Amino acid sequence: MTILRNISAITASLLIALPALASDTDHFKGKAANTLEQAVSNFSEYNQKLEEVLAGDLSPEAMHEVHQLTYTLENALQKLDDEIDELEETLEKVHKASEHADPDTVRSAGKEYLVNSRKIVK
Image 1 (cartoon, rainbow, N blue to C red):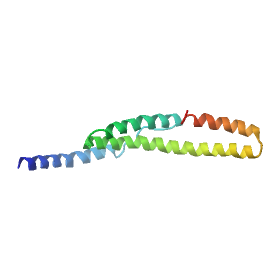
Image 2 (cartoon, rainbow, N blue to C red):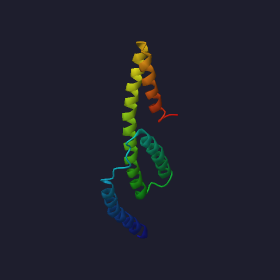
Image 3 (cartoon, rainbow, N blue to C red):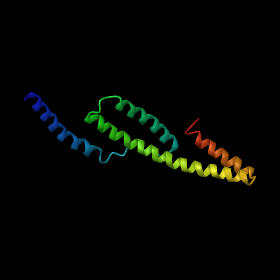
């Protein structure tokens, strides 16, 4: 009987705690990633945090933390996706300029591409 009471108590606690946790996160926005540098930094930092949480017990509190972490990771990934799209466009300018023997565009767009791509990979 004691085990059943403990299970009942735990279940009741979760039924009370989980809606409270969910209501706290309904409007959680995560850290903004307004620049490529912020996105890369947040991505790295929050991947590390996620890894640490996943290494432990996935308690209701841990699940809440994962839920919050994912907002920042999603923001970072969205910014990275946007920036990668821009990098692709810039690299395409370099590519086309090289086909048309346009050294000025190759040099300027190539430098722009390298500056921005190195924010992701050194």
